[in-house]
Length: 144
Image (tube, rainbow, N blue to C red; front, side, top):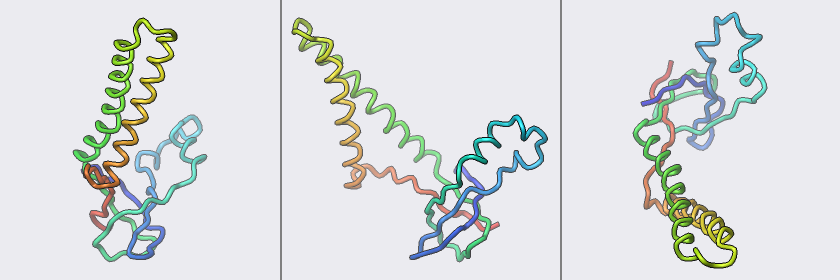
């Protein structure tokens, strides 16, 4: 499990919303002026994320939020490798089919983009129909 410290910002409709807690590595650092992590963190606003929780919480509680690393790895492989394989397969098939055609390069590029887009659409449809169960939602592990 990958764990991160978070703070509960709101609770509504049996849903817990958290924001990332303070970064422990940045607390005592003296290089804040030249640190890109501090600069990016100060520019970007904190984003609330919904998480599942079986623990009774209230706003302001510090919690440990976790996500299953195996599920996250499988989901990332699915979302990166399948479209990439589809892109190269589509381009290869178009190269084989339209090798001597007029504007062959345009057919190859169009086929690659089309196969890439169709693979992303199919992954989205499979996830929405729960055929692929890569539901990587964080959960509250414990209250701190």
